[in-house]
Structures are given as structure tokens and as C-alpha cells.
Length: 179
Image 1 (tube, one colour):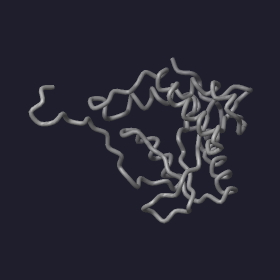
Image 2 (cartoon, helix red, strand yellow):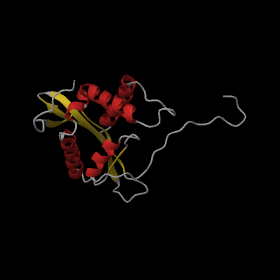
Image 3 (cartoon, one colour):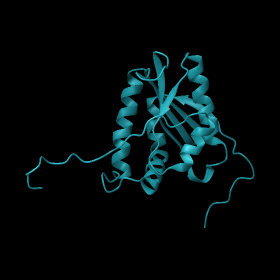
Image 4 (cartoon, helix red, strand yellow):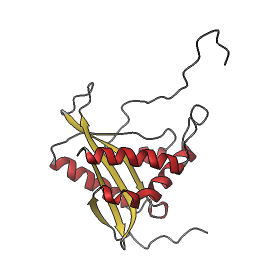
């Protein structure tokens, strides 16, 4: 049985927080990772890591970027509990496209499964864009796992379109070597 849907958009507040709140998003990160694993398309090349292992690795990257002053964490809270988050960072502009010298990368955006399609992701994206605009950054990049068509449609509504295709494959042993 699924949880009942809210009667309307949920009341959430978006807060920018520090690294001390990273552990508050672990469950949401794992939900996102498991969703990606369910829809992702390259399992035969490189299976998805277990959610806990992926979280430890992702958390370390987030912490490092925040310590360097380039990473920022936004949490959507409902009744004091995290129901979504966005993590983004600033980085060098794209070498091939005419972006500014600095641009942003949306590293992760996740919303509690029961609250998807209720505007929480849009509130997070709006908050990300507000902060980037205030910083003079006018381009953002992100990765979407192959097969996650819902995410692609969401980002397209924000004017974020596919520009590259990232491929993943195994390195083949030299010819003549036994596997």
C-alpha cells in the first residue's frame, strides 16, 4: 500500500546548511542511488555500488567541496525533517561551450519518493538558480543516469538539455593475454 498523497503541494522550507548536516541527507541520497540503479542502463559494464558504499564516497566528495568553499547544500524540510536536497558546486567554465569562466555543476538532487511531482524539486532548483544568479554564474551542468527519463524531463523544464553523452566501458586486456 502506498502512502496517501498530500492534498496539495507540501509545506517545505529550503535551508542552505553546512557540512554538519550532511548525515541528514543520507537516506535521501540512498533513495536516489537505488532509483538510479533500478532505471540505469549499464549494469553489465559496471554494476551499481551498494547504496551505503555510494553514500560514503559521495559524502566524502561533498565534504571536500564544502571545505574548499565550492560546494553548497540545500535541504528541503517539512515539519523539521529533510524531504529533499540539492548539492551543487562551482567549477571552471566549459572549455568547449561559451560559458562564463565559472559555471556550476548540480551534483545531486533528490526528493523523498512520496513527495515527487509535488513541486519540492522545483523549489530546490529555484533556490539553486537564485544562488547561482546572485553569484554571477549563468550556466549549470549535471549528469543524469542513462534510463532516467523522468529526470531528463524535469531538467528540460528548467532549460537544461543534454549536451554530451558520457559513456562507460571496461578496458579490454591486450590482445593475446588470457582473461
